[in-house]
Image (spheres, rainbow, N blue to C red):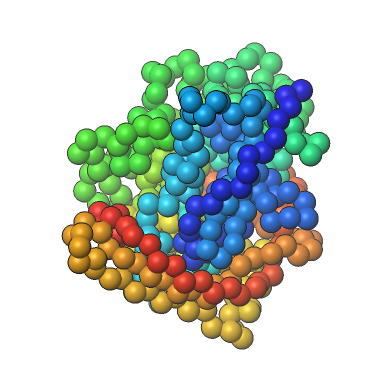
Length: 426
């Protein structure tokens, strides 16, 4: 057993209006973050290291589990954890500005979003996102998390054991190509998904060129540690998305267990295509209720309707339509329903003051004052709550399960001032 200890807490200045980990890590994007019992601390293994996070209204605090003594001062190894967190949480984008843009074009977003500030689209490893969302078919957040945990424990590299819990990294495709993998996964409760995971692992590891999955990524948002492609932007934005997004989506559909919804989840959360809009039955209900779908030629969720919903949201919100869609998806989850109930009694305001910096034409000064809703745990509801789960094309037998987390609301107010490059101001 590897012995070690956590480093001291360090902080990354970021307000709750720009990132709320208690919402972002629970809304069906990533399924490996562990909320330490009776605390506001979250832990996960990313890129081979065990990270622990917590947050207050003005800072994100992080620490890393160290399994060996730190290097001597004469030969220190640079700590790239801040860069990793900035990448993973997509912090280069000004979220308050994005919310303002989406609100100006969509009254429904303007009504719902103030109670759900700080939701970011994670930039996850593409392979992890692919396997996780294959697990999501006809499933719910709690049970997907259990499956992903089993994959890590049985096939992923061990990293550390803390507080009686073993932490593993996510297994690569090669680890899931053994002849006994499918049978073992069935024994572990994966059902029909076991075949899809095994077959997709074989395709990616043995039947595609090395780096094929990463080649589908948005060139503006490469994997952590890689540089953006020169002059790459994925193509001109259209109602159906950029050419690069459409090519990535089509490539993913060639894999086992991947239909349009799973492909869109991977494009959005693993490959950096912000215009990707995953549409499941839950999102279809939002489209019917709030955007007048469900009439004429779009009475049911067919392939044509799936495309029409995505195209409508892309036209409405632009190249980050998937991000805006995820905010409304989260707002519609039962586990966060108390926020909307609370909003009827108290207003939530977001005020932004952007000032030009006279001494440096390449910088702007952004001041944000936010009164925002912050979720804390309550007793779990008895009814199951589904994430973006049911694929519109491939229908499989359903499994039972329940989501395990609810939320109540506290209000907090923050004011943050920071400098940012004009090229990042959106």
